[in-house]
Length: 329
Image (cartoon, rainbow, N blue to C red; front, top):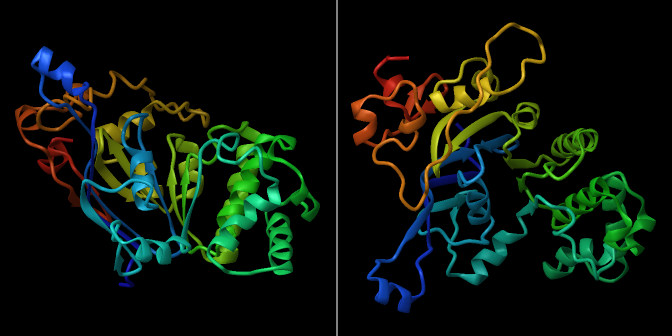
């Protein structure tokens, strides 16, 4: 087995959401902590697309920000190409930084409106010292053509482009440092459906052309099905299932995965019954004991309310569920 490009082990992140100190003293309240992610572990092989899915508030974007270094983990470790990321060492992080990039969710907020497109794309090239002088301008023009725009667009400002074109500019910026790994945080959620398909096809073409590895963050199962090789399902900051892309859609293991898929409209008219997603994600500041999904799970029993399930092997993937482990479903 080849060494994975990215390995995440026990990744955990807490946020202090307490009231100000004086309020806590007057009201005699303790500090409050929000657990955004808890003990998340997965691996991504070179050249594959690994997707993280889940409802809003499940911790997808928090994981993405920790992997690219925008947030420091409270616990756990991230290993990129055999090298553990040391968030305290600016020099080591800078050396790794140009090897991975991020495409953000909102193309209207992720581009500096005061900069011309050429300067936006050229910034990583200059920051990492990859080129200088006239070479930078030629590379910017080449990248714009790679993503389906023209070299002359380098002179324009972001407001002169549509949402889909702005996301193409964001992709060109991500490619400018010649990365091996790109984190895509809901890259098409702010776009029209027809434009979404164009951007997703562009991302797949670029992956084949440059040998890129993707971590795709999404709540849209149709996007995940189209793009991913393997899928991790998150619930309240914990991974409840990891499965091959085709396997998850044909034979989901965890009850939460089944609930998400049951809510997808039956466009093929197969006659399969569909159910609306029931209930809501619990408060992450005060999660339920045991398995966090048990208040919404139709298969929950006493053990689910007392213990936190650990991932167990299921085929080529993993499922964290006592009902699956004990053969109840």
